[in-house]
Length: 349
Image (cartoon, rainbow, N blue to C red; front, top):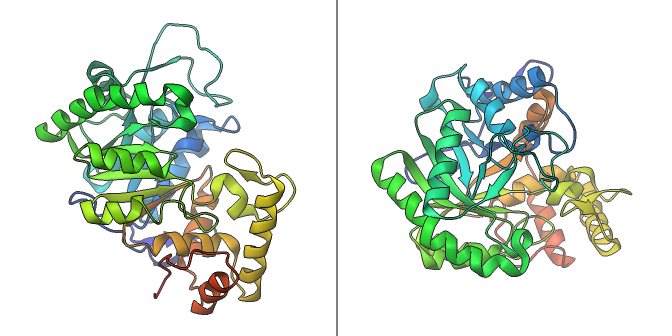
């Protein structure tokens, strides 16, 4: 597998930076996120979907994250097919528990995916439910082990007023299952994947976790995890996988009409703040997503940044952004204008 990043023109850029260790695993700084491969926003061409995963692997990305939720198994199927083109031990595979697919039952609405497989998801954080989810993932991915296994979506965002019940169920059930799998060697690292920093902190205090994936709550736009969870992660030596670092799109597209924030059209106050950040970036000749990636990579708790893509060209574009340097003056100006938390680590700081 090449350690250079393939560009859209077929050439290679400099070697992809290495992230920080996760329970002895050493991922690339940029990981591949499989959520879009579940037909999240649109129905994807099967060949292109698998070519996108292969392009990421060929470019030096060696961590691939997915979940049974993503297209109700479709993302795992597509990633599994692509993984068969490379040695299994060359890739760090991350997936999740908390849902298993009920084959043969009518698919219900509400998955959030426009496409995917015709299997309804059953939310289940019990011990047996986690083991069932794990076994289904092994079959879809075509592997005999998972490197990173995360308890998925135990947060208010997903469960509303049922969250406390789900948290109790997960710690009594799914967590015990993951501990058992880690002890057996079937899984190398265990953790959680959620949308809220507060839940990362709760899980970190409640169990012995190696890694946590936090989506959307530590970015160039918002640093809610800075005071509580991230220092705790450093203290407990919990590696952090960051996802949603573009806050569902607005830090990639900029403050244009229709830009998305938290999977919905951005409200006026978010558009205004992003426009101010974008103006500072432009003054330094830096693209907004370029600054967003560089900022997230600077925190010492962050092991890898997981980015989704649906074409090989998107993979190449993401890696080209990571390779571009960002002047130190940009961070000083963002902090001076109150657009970035003063305590936030920045590149070179």
